Image (cartoon, rainbow, N blue to C red):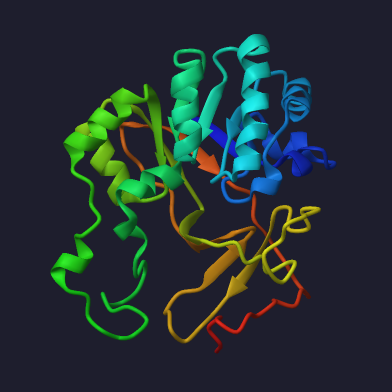
Length: 272
């Protein structure tokens, strides 16, 4: 079983990064923050540190961030063809297909996987199928956003996707049963939602020195019967590793509990 770990470029350059990687396959970048996207210099630093080319991870990209990623791919195509790209942006996926099809190994990141099955993020871990309003969800609401499997299979072939990643056991089994692509599973945290409200800086951050690093914040509210964890621009809940014959890679994201840090609250936030 192959193990992988996601580190941002800033975390990679801190002391102890090699010990944290501990022989795992390195995913370089960030799934949720465009301020943490790697450059080619970061790619080279990672390769020098580990002795292997890292996989590159993207998030949802702004136009400026997409241009920067295009510059990164241009250099990798010449100097590191075959690099694995964990893609979480449809625009980037289309860009790779048009300009570099066959030059990289394309992996569908868990953000894009949820694009086909976003219902799996709802009411996770709750004792009922009621939302925040307490209203029971109707059948059509619970099944509205499940993309038909034949379309997904055509999509994977269309964009030459070699691997699919998820943190949902239900989604994993769906792909294991219906496709032949390689499969990865994320733990110990499962994605619930993404946001642009940064709890570490108190709002939408146009400029960022990456104060969050690997730190996470635990958030509790009476509206949910399980805790949320905020890290970067995303919210998570705990999940567990799975066992399945099709599983050949596990992916972890370092989470370090933050203490003594005041959580910024905006007027739309839930209060206890």
